[in-house]
Image (cartoon, helix red, strand yellow):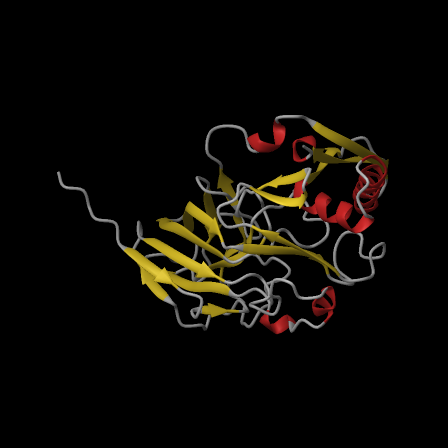
Length: 317
């Protein structure tokens, strides 16, 4: 029996939107099984260009953040179904940036001033923070989601019941993502792409970069996913093989407030990095956002919970 030819579509940088809105016309209409190739700008939609001073981060037009490719109308998808998104390939552009935007991030009170770092990406396998500090690239889309049945426009930040700005770093190539469908066609969009990021994205940015990526769409009828949830299945193998090779430096903070525990675990890691690796506090915070993982170690030993911050030692040459 002859193979059915895969239908392919393209969504370019001119087919974007900045808010979730179920009244938007689709950029493309696809059948279940079709592949869509996307090309998106970095998260500020060109407001930040390589070499710009950090003060530009205080002048951003927030209505032009999160240029999302789409929406993609998937024929046959109806409310109550589940949209399957097969992540086929992701390729970062030539450069990316990481920064601190005043008022945002886990330690916003500790770092009130803007700060920015630029990275060469392209065909590289790592991003260089310093010659002896190389951060493995593991590209993914920070924002992947569907329009909801709520009237728009709806901001991309924070996430919605249709997922969206979830910043989940394991949504890499080979992973299948499952999303609840709220409106006919699902109206899927994606963007906000990252070259690398740790679990927690503690300084509020990963390596923000332009990216081309390819996704295959399918529909699971009457999947009945819980609202305000999304599921994904990773490919076989270690989740972070490039990071596991030399172990982790781990700081665990205890106390009755999970958020304060998270802050203290990152603060103490920053202290270790400035003392042992002679990084500035700003670069230490950036490194935590790109190569460190926040994890809940225990949430049952009331009233004091444990939050751990794992920093991959493999980034140090």
